[in-house]
Image (cartoon, rainbow, N blue to C red; front, top):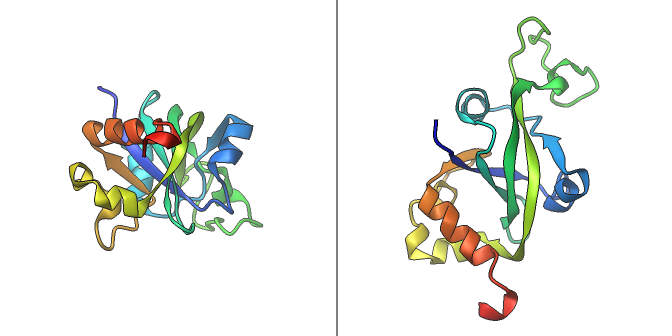
Length: 159
């Protein structure tokens, strides 16, 4: 299967690109949407590229990129009664929620705001700019991924 590209949203006050850089890897736990879970369980492969998106930020936008470093495993938070992600229906034998591990690659030279993404006509197919698109994990076309990288890795002076 060929490499795929993804956008993964996180709230920076919960887990930011700086946290991922410090930790090197993390399980993408706590996702409680079936479509996002299915992307992790069925579609994401080791080596897939990930755009790291800060949602609920001022402004929201892309902070860097990562890779999928391990295939989906049972999300441990579904079994933790103290976690807000606990699911009483989940069992170790029949887990409901799964998550991949992602590995830090690089922070962008400059943050790419959602407004800047929307302003780029050649990024019009990105799901993140569609009205009502709140899914925390979204597929990204290779051409859009490469364009975002070219913007994000450009030094500040070249805006």
